[in-house]
Length: 343
Length: 273
Image (tube, rainbow over all chains, first blue to last red; front, side):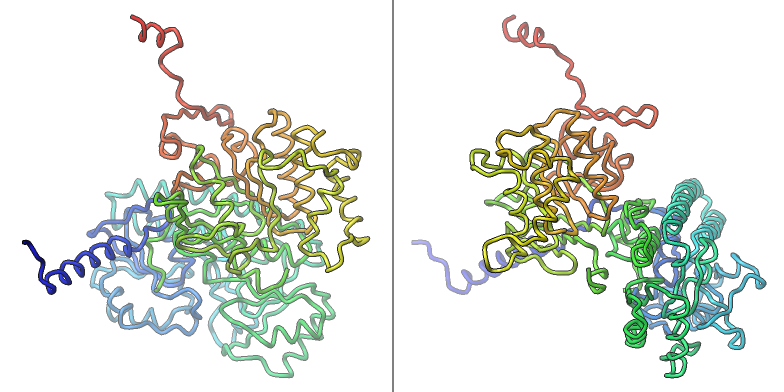
């Protein structure tokens, strides 16, 4: 009679379980189908998520885009990790916001980059020093202008244009794809610009005021007729003093601001306190460098970032959020689930 | 709505798997809806559209994955943020209730312990009946209404609790084209007034003209995006597993299954020759 020895039985069982487990435990593919760029493509290394996303929208599947600053991490104080040094060493193009936003990364990039790799500073190529804004969190004495250019969609479009030109020059074989992606990106940016304008115009004029924790709206506000009446975070990225808080409360009462805004990256009990004392509504989810949703989701894009911010502003300031709530936020080249955003 | 909820997309469906038996109906479906979106789930019969809604409502439990509504995990019972309008043919029309009574039922989940309605419930019902243009029908039995009117009654019921999210299962099924148009215009108005709206439909052409975001479902999520982006032959063929034609003319989109290359006569002759 045929019998199976006990060790053999267990061995077979274990193998079977391993095979079944491997088949079931395989991580499910993300949303829809994504084309992942093959090895051998141009490697573009970027920093904050909005810039990574803008670069992806231009590069599409023709180049590999890797962002190194994780979403939700304060970009102003970010120190690159050893794994980031490796990416910088392999990069063909290194795209930074510039205007001293990512100084430690810039220094590391200069030290580690391949000889023929190119470092691109977007901010410096977008505005001239006479357009630099110095303000609450970025006072002139400290020397660094406010680096948050991208919340202005027209500056974001310029960022995309700079990326396109670099990619076309470094990788002429894929020039057509870069140009086509840029053209579609431009069309969507124009639509976004228009949607933001309409949404802001729906806010009663006296309410078109922004009081935020971190000063990210300096280049956004003037374009749409909004006023940045203050930011709470001092230049050294610490918490404001009691005196400063008292002055702000005074200012908010005078300006009759209906809402004040925080961000998820910089949770602030001070803002909460100010809101309580002034009766303003505290809205703590504006974003400047982390994108809404998860990679692979159509909301996880520069368009999603801006559409959500403006929707939240319109909602809190008495405007009509419906004017931007259905904006198409999907990435131009398709879902971005394969793009690395610093994680 | 509290500030904390704004952190999250209103609806988050994450790697959802579900099957009634061994074969999965939904395979690894993930998507999000942000506040204020108006979206339609489209796909053929049996694609899992209603199943997906039932999972979002918490009426079914996923095999894998999860759903969150305003950051809260859906767990066995409908979220208070949702107003639901079932398919008309799922309703027992012989049950003897009037329009008023049906609409007031929408208040039950927020109601206090005692079983009578409060003044503000009545006032809200009045407002909704007016807004939806069915105030004159208030004492009618729901059986004696047209499809469009019935749809409005159940919409009013769903709106009683002032939900953030409205979910409608096939709101345009079983009504004529004119009524379907009216229903979608009504949903667009509610969306403009701030409601997030999710519907299922198999009527691609009506949806294309009225809904800004489409989710193409056939077991899996095949694609999502604005109608111009997803109503293309490649995506439709994969969604409907049939050959589809898309006609674009003067900004209009028309989708149809590819006409068959035979007539009834051909079939007959093929059969009998």
